[in-house]
Image 1 (cartoon, rainbow, N blue to C red):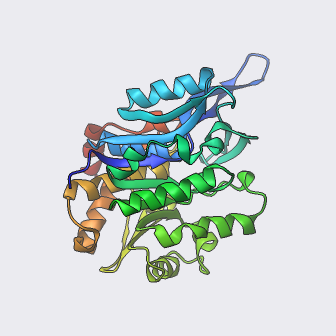
Image 2: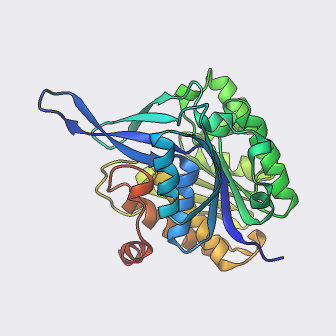
Length: 321
C-alpha cells in the first residue's frame, strides 16, 4: 500500500542558542537557532525531495511559535506538533571549541518535548509512513519515553522501517549507566540506525566501530552506520561493510552533522524504492557518500537545521574527488 509520507520523526524540537560573538562590554551573544536531531534529520531528507512530518511538543511561547513556523518553512508537515501552554519550549545553550566541537547546557526541567503523551499523537502519521525515525532524547523522561515505545510499535505494525539515532547527551541523563540501559531498550524494534564512534561503547560491549556494528547486526538491526567524524562513515549490512571517506570541510560548527548525514542517507534509501535486504554494500556506500557530502556542507555554517544545504549544493560537493 502506498504511503503518504516518506519519513515521519518523533522527538525533541528545541532552540539551540549558539555563540555569536561578544558585546562591546565582553558579554557573550547567542544566536537563536532551531534545532533538535529528529527535525534536523527530516530537514535533510526534505531537501532531497522526501515528504516528511514531525511529531512532538513545544510550548505556547515565542520559541515554540518560531519552531512551528520554521518547520513549515522547511516543508515539514506540522500537524503532529502539539503546542502546549502549560510547559516551556526546551532550550539548549551551545558552546564551541576552536574545532567547532560542542558542549551543551539544557533548560529542560521539564521541557515541552519530554511531556508528549501518546493520546496527543496523531496515529495516522504513524500508520502512513515508509520510515519512522526516533532518537534517544525522547527516552530520558516520562511521559515521552512511554509515548516513544507506543509510537514505534504502532508504526512497525503498519510496515514502517524503524530508524534510530541514539544521539547521547550526558547532561540529560542522571547517570551513564541509566542512559546505556534506556538507549539499548529500543533496539529490538530497530531496523536501521546511525551512531557515532563515541557512542559505540554505550550501545554495545565494543568501542571499535566494526565490532560494534557487527554486534548490532547480530542483535537484529538490519543496517548500521557508524559516523567517524572527518574520516567519514562505516556502513555495515548483512551484505558486508564499507568505510566511506568524508569530504574536506572548513568546520565552523558540527551541530547537526550526524543528523544531516542520516537524513540524506535515508533519503537515498527511500528514493531507491527497494527493500533493505536488496541493497548491496556498493549501493549503500553510494548512499553514504551522498550523506557525507550533505554533512560536510552542514558543518561549514553555524546552527543545525538552518545550515543544511540545498540539494544543488550537495551535487556540487559530490563532484569533488
